[in-house]
Amino acid sequence: MNSEKTTLSKKAEILEKQKKYLWPNHLLYYTEPLPLERGDGLHVWDVDGKKYLDFFGGILTTSVGHNRPEVTEAVREQAEKLIHSSTLYPNEAHVNLAEKMAEITPGKLQVSYFTPSGTDADETAVFLAQTYTGHQEIIALRHGYSGRSAIGMSLTGQHTWRIGGTHFMGIKHAINPYCYRCPLKMTYPSCGVACAGDVEDVVKTMTSGRIAAFIAEPIQGVGGFITPPPEYFKMVQEVVKHYGGLFIADEVQTGFGRTGDKWFGIEHYGVEPDIMTMAKSIANGFPLANTITTPEIAESTRNAGLTISTFGGNPVSCAASLATIGVLEKEATPQHVAMLGRQLRSGLERLQEKYAVIGDVRGMGLMHGLELVKDRQSKEPSPDATKQLFEATRELGLLIGKGGLYGNVIRISPPMTATEEDVAIALDLLDKAFAKVR
Ligand SMILES: Cc1ncc(COP(=O)(O)O)c(C=O)c1O
Image (tube, rainbow, N blue to C red; front, side, top):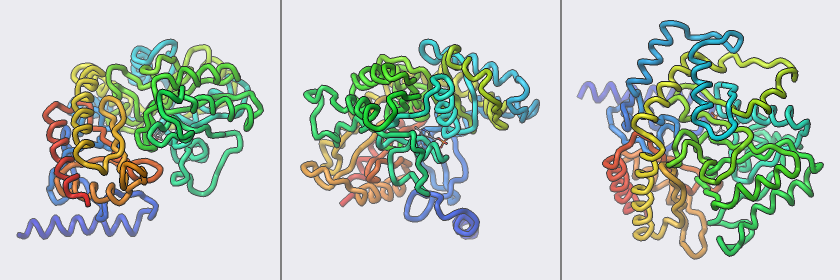
């Protein structure tokens, strides 16, 4: 009885301090926010001791599960040797990680610039493309997300994530390949992927015709796991090249095997990006991001002016990343993810047959979304059903994510070390939770 009292007050204390000392624009899940205390593998516990199966993975970040011992050990070892050096001094973990990145990324992507966040990585990619091409303008996609800096928000194609009204004039947005809500009101495949043509229209009508880059996520994450058709990126890449731009693949959410079968999402589309950005899953929760490119493109930065990143290539984060990739290679390979992805997909499709509120099931590997609608005919988004499902899954001990411009997409993205049993349990809990949605 006493300990119940203590934990209850601990929760209240955390929530009160959150309210009092942190900006009110911290987005918090659930009607009553959920303070977490500890994690282990696929599970986390809240301050009241309640256990949850984590099928969001800390926004697709705990790639090998919470508190994975190999990662913890690598971090401890590195922290005892050297915690900080900045990018002014080479260090072993930094260069070893850069070597590993060159090994696992496709094609000519060989040289890295590490920074602390995905926002940083995307900004670094923009600056690199501008330096290399001598052009300024960037094409991004509607419904995309690139981060919370001024450039990040300008690249982002959702009003909800663009606070303050900042917008860099040189950034233009083409329509996105959102097949479920086709912006051209067409149907795949008879549409011939007509949306890809909008990139050229935007270049011709809204830019000088000399672009620095096109940036896109292979699957739009915050946008609600919007998954382009297989032909899309090849068609767009030709246009981008023609107008002198580079192709930046933002793999912040899709990287490190998340989409199954391949290490990076863009590899499913048979195109080789000129620049790739990554973060989130890279270091299992330690702050780290990377912008990787070809030696030729990187060379253009040599005399372009000074730049440093105080926390970029932080030895502890790099050590965590090397250990994370080691675990992925050993037990959560892209093939493992693909196998679980098939199980997850067929389970979600069964739920779609059962519950009319599920309008669309989409995604790849361990990155699947469910778009919830009021009815399948009108496809009117149902953020209310999403909210109900959230509360029901919390109650049942399952963590999931949310996304989409209309706040009506459920995002499912567990740590990639998940097992078939974890997926089966999550599907069962989802089934029970959907049964409660009115
Ligand atoms: C695709 C994509 N790019 C960039 C970012 C920004 O990353 P960060 O939050 O680490 O700055 C995010 C974050 O959600 C993202 O999903």
